[in-house]
Length: 168
Image (tube, rainbow, N blue to C red; front, side):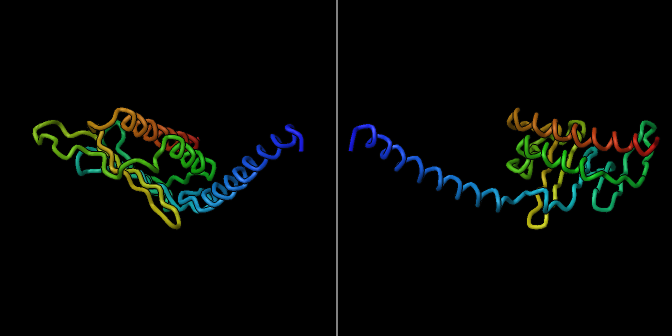
């Protein structure tokens, strides 16, 4: 066997098993991913000050309740399209929502300060549900806080756009 054939054999004997194992391993991981859009069930989004979460949206029932500019509570039926739900699912995946801690509040917050906004975001799937409680005055990692704020803005943007479409 020549040197060239020996090198080709050595490279092939290392790379081919590695590629086959990688395809097998990641194929199983993708197939068994816990948060797949094909298993998507609902999005629940609530926010308000303190314990009074007056602003609520539930995609399963389409119930949407919010406080308008005049501090009156409005209720309406709001159905998101599957494209909107897919967009929110992908945005949550891009921002790493599945890795967020479930409690992002300040446990030792002073009782004398003003009540800050609290958000509850829940993505429900057939096999799993991810629920995050986020306080706007959260003192944790700045990147985590930024990711939460971006996801909240995206959800509110989709809700506002859908609401505008329904008014037309």
